[in-house]
Image 1 (tube, rainbow, N blue to C red):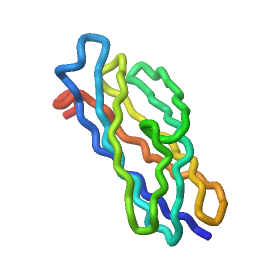
Image 2 (image 1 turned 135 degrees about the vertical axis):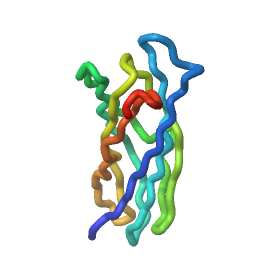
Image 3 (image 1 turned 90 degrees about the vertical axis):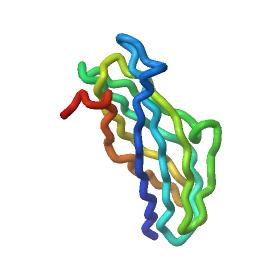
Image 4 (image 1 turned 30 degrees about the vertical axis):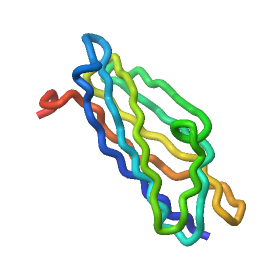
Length: 121
């Protein structure tokens, strides 16, 4: 059975929490289950890359302390943050999921850019 999880991301630069050499970005995630059966998000894997090419890998259970079950035709939303050493970077990754039928699958998180506003014109 084909699992259809769609992940969308919006980002915000947090100027008031940032300082030289530490750029704070909040990201808002929407995980939409467009499939026909419920799926539980078990764990996540992120690759965070700064403008100098430094890559940080982050893995862990669930998201923000939860392992949500996402019903068919519904979505789960959450927000989190990351800190970069450069004013520009990107993130991408995947969620490890388990469908109601017991099968395991990965849902890709498409690459998205983190950038201080008006830095990239």
